[in-house]
Length: 415
Image (cartoon, rainbow, N blue to C red; front, side, top):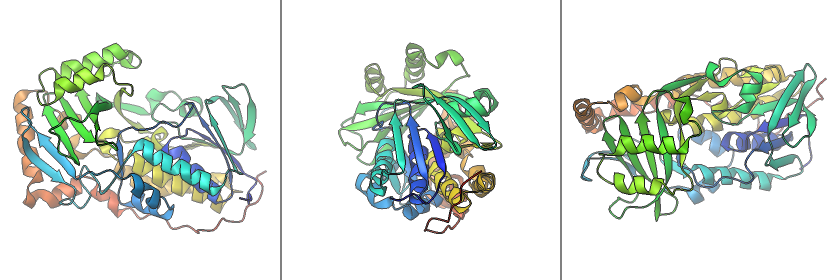
């Protein structure tokens, strides 16, 4: 494609947020450079969903045909006791896609590949994609941003977009240390791939609640495999960050007496090639832009995995930011401000955690755990469904996605 803008935008992070904003910028004729620390796209990952405004944004971006090819067969969540008996269900159909499982579910890796395919189809003339590189230093002034990369090169850009996740290096370099913006929510999460147990119902996300922890087994894109998803209540411990043995030990202690498929899950954990572990944390950055550096997705606004809205916020944020930049390429400050103003109402709702957070979701005692199970049965009952739908993401459906011109806006050089 032919460039219609002299802008040069650097995007740090080749995940969903980074690739989505790169795609929309290219469609507006704006040159995008993407740097991704990994040496290749990361496949797999757990399921993410699109609902309400994020589904609408994906439709406007033309992503739904590609998503449809990889959409998971997910029918809802089944709550299971230690012997494998289902005591409550949150069926996707009964909750109109507004429960824990939405009507559009896709693995993170597949959604990212859909975006990469769209980037390739849009045209590579205005896209510079670099794997195995990352930002080491940022120096900005009124005229632009000087960036030093790990590869040793130095370049200037008009705008830098940090889309590099919860532990964003871009945010650390420009906005300040992580502890200013990240709040530990009382626990840790882990997930990894396992062989699908023979008695797991196809299409159902099985969930087992035990004192202080939760074990989930979720359908994967390959029916022969599933994702084990574990959440554990625990105080913040910085030493866990890179200690795989300590991470696995924490999970083992939490699921030692969980029953159901916990023994098989724990056995698979030791050899899982995709074992992932991180704290359950919320990221709040009051001002998403400092000068010519802007944050998007988990780098700027993460409600934690408990909110279930990380991908939704990333897709909507990418769609809005790219459109605002294209609308006034000669006024990036105004574009950044309009971006923040436009998505803040969604962020305020999407970062809320259904069910009152980990203390309510994962009580520590056996007595309170039994009461929590009783509460699940009540909330899944037919009379309570309207309230439950409201608790699970109902408010975000009220967000109105801004309308933008579909053709690139006229552009003038920045000074």
